[in-house]
Image (cartoon, rainbow, N blue to C red):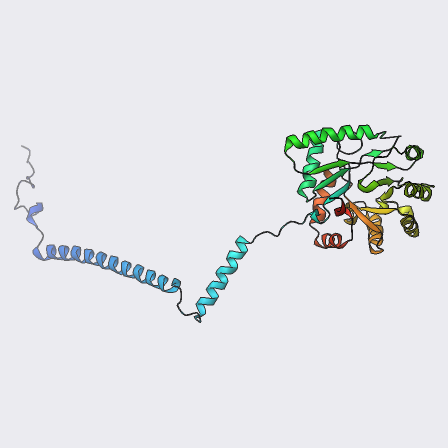
Length: 329
């Protein structure tokens, strides 16, 4: 017969029954006391953290509080630092320089499709807006009249100008635009001069140019004839006729005949090279220059003109020149 094991759990008096060893009162009290201590410690830590945060807030308020005395050291130092940082991040940009001191651009190629300037009306409008943004209030287009390459006439130029006037009005561009011509000295020009078929700038001024390779042999004679007929010749970009670099007296000679000189603005920035820049500076220093012109043909010229305006020294020099552009406003 098998022996059945005793039922331990059924006999509370058995030595291995859980109820046979109830926790003593002392242990229970210790557990309760420890629990209370832990709760009190947590509450105390909370109070300490609250007190520390309050102290930090108070210190922060004390530090950031604006001193009442104007002689307090924090009063000046904090103001200076704050004011400097404010100026650094909120500094207003310096006003951009512009050609407002000239007012009139008297040499440009902005009429569409009749010479090596603007090829179409869209480009023409872009160049006109660009010149206006640079401070010009009046633009005088001077397309080439050179029979071999650009056989323009007074009528073709006036037709192109009429189209530009219409487009400018439709686009709402507020700038005055007129037209003359840049005449290449050759036999064809002499024929036009003999017939008085010339498109002039204001006050019967007329813009003339020569080859960059060699001087026109009858330059002095042509200048004399123009002046005799009541025209006022202006030689375009003399600084680009480098064959006269060693003979500047030629410029003085035609000036004495009554011919004025116009330097390209881009020559002063070195766009056409150092030799032209140096010759332009010599002519300016000699007091021989009466006009400045952009000789604007395309967007590359426009971008370089904007870059020239960022050269404070160059702008200051142009402003001090006794140019006559503004006389035509």
